[in-house]
Length: 392
Image (spheres, rainbow, N blue to C red):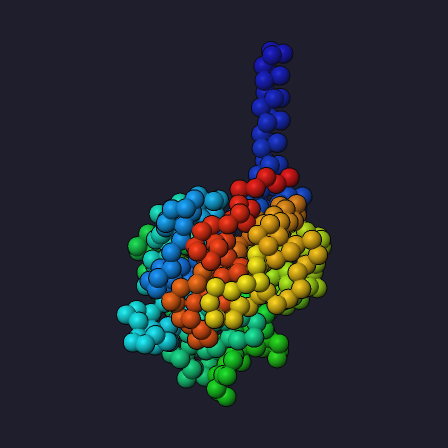
């Protein structure tokens, strides 16, 4: 009888401890979101298909290799890819015009398929534009410019998102994560908007309309996949509390991950040594996983082509020179900060945008070859190793 009581007591204690652990995993008071228990090493490979089509070559250990395999072998677990609505200009920048568009659904399907074939998860980044969307530019797709009602706009965003994700799901290509908008600090769908177009610029007070549109996009994700995580994305950690407090107060609450861009050379309000405190604050304030969706740092100030580089003219951050070792140290420091604060991942923006005969609206080649993880001959450099580095 005494032995039986001991066994029963042990079982009860085990059950109670298990329930406590489950409660913590759900992110309820006293615990952390379960997603935080997995750290994602991400790479944005949106340009890779276009680069490969226009003469770009990637090498690892002296051998030409598939870039998706290279990143997998060096520790990448997640591929991010952007989607534009109708990017016809990506054909016409070539002379003669290219045979296909880039950053449309067909191109994105190739990226997702290759990522999954190499065992990596996928983050699909809806820009809701025919071109780049970022804090200074949120152009309306040509197909939507005649819209005059926020109800119609919300439905258009819903139907478009639903159509894209259904098509991917039917091919076994459903992404594990979806961004509903890219760096939407002031909102989306507002640059050069026609007078009758529904206002979606939150910096001008249009929070309610922005919330309606975002809820339409999120509803489409939920209607296709209950497992896919929804990420909301702003640039610069200094904007996170202001933006997420406002968007939540206007009714956008059904999302899974806090996402922000952090380029140390641009986003100086939150220096590197304060990044972990900020991420910890975001996690506690919103009880959501937190990820850096874009970051990068140069390894040289030199260029491999005539396309002017975006980074390289700035002053290096103290302790992190523009060298291969400096780039590696910067990425290890950012990653350690995220891990220290319980962050869920870091995504490097376009680490494979090497020079080639690829063209965009501003040049031929690359404006980023000095920020990639490859030298000017397409060989991997030491900084790609940060994904397999030892962390505390």
